[in-house]
Image 1 (cartoon, rainbow, N blue to C red):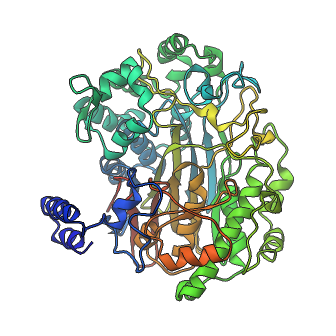
Image 2: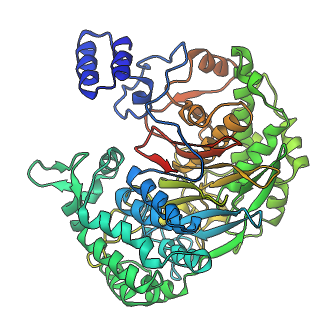
Image 3: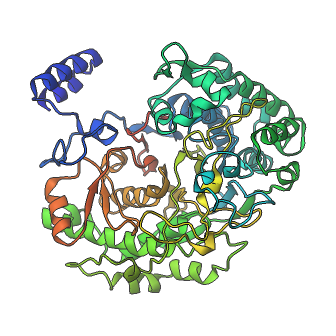
Length: 599
């Protein structure tokens, strides 16, 4: 470890590689903690390396400081695009759209115009926040038991597709708030597309997670090396020519073209060729959904969360339960205090995920009482007093959990803060990596696998629990999502924090933990994002935690009855922007190759 850390300090990649290779050969060097956090080849069985006894050094990511505006995304190229839109006088919506068009290329494994998003938008002048739900919707021909004959059809093949909402969401947001011409927002992505862009480490990893994409002719031509018989490596240049053509059509004809124009004709042909049940009528009937974001009072601040079927309600409930402890930096200052604090947080996670199975699309399920309960201070306090500092139950029913939680997967998050104080936190997804694993031959659009976010009667998870009835499939319904784009505002109306994450079911707990660290534990943005994460979703009944969590903490939680499971993959990826009276601070999670740009 010493040699590795010295190499990092020297800042020379070649020296780092040479020293670590030599040291590993002689058995005296282990990967740095941030390498362990993204290592997918860690040995099974005994933990190697063991949990550290001392805090780990900071990751290589940078905490950026600006005075006027900031854009944080999973791609430095795309964050720069958003920053440039701000410098041209664009609205925060303009900057978000341009950034997302770009990310649909550089991060096509996670998001794109074949998927959907949820946006949390704060307008400083109005001191009000709005939610734009542009997630996928099930087809009109979808039905409750459509996946029972083969559960794999939820995540691969033609039955896994939902009607995409991404592009209509961009278009509707621009129609309502856009300041710059539409084509100017698509132009940077067209340039990136035509010039080509390098495969990122995350994209390369995603090809290994979803190797089925090698059987799709379009994706194979982009990402597979026929000479070596393997997927192309990080750094290889990708030029998706059909998608470039589609973007040029979108720039010229507008975002509605995918739903009722020339592009729709091509897209419908792609859908038919795949065997999808989505029709032209489904595209024409697609509507985004605008609503007010939900304000949660948080010790003087206001946290704006998104309504169901997103998971903002769950994030708010976690914070409401825990605010009764009046956490301060002192609560993580000693080993015993840290163990007790983490135990309390984990118990709040468990109680909250017990409620997750009651959430569904409010257009189909009456969840008005649930919303009332989970936004109630009194209800949260009643839960908090049930948390025992010396005990945890292993029974999901003790926390209200009777159904398993559908896992969601590939996502990307963008956080933006504009010069005028407006802000956007937006999370986008095609669900699994590269969606259903197919790309349209005519449009170059990667099809989502959004139907996997629904539950199905009769399908049980590994632990024998059935899916959640409020989340059963209905025609033209939105599925439950873990997305939790969040904005925290001070009493003066100024934004204090713009935060959100990618990472499936781990999104909500990751955002909650980072928010606590910034608002309650006195940590800066980089400290909060770097910190090793832990997660509990009630089922399975164990705490997932990252390498970097100190040994005493793991042991202490085990002594309280928690089962501990260290995972060796990225988990959640946070983009966070904090503002105080001095400056704007931004950090893109080291767990992915993002960055922050601003001025």
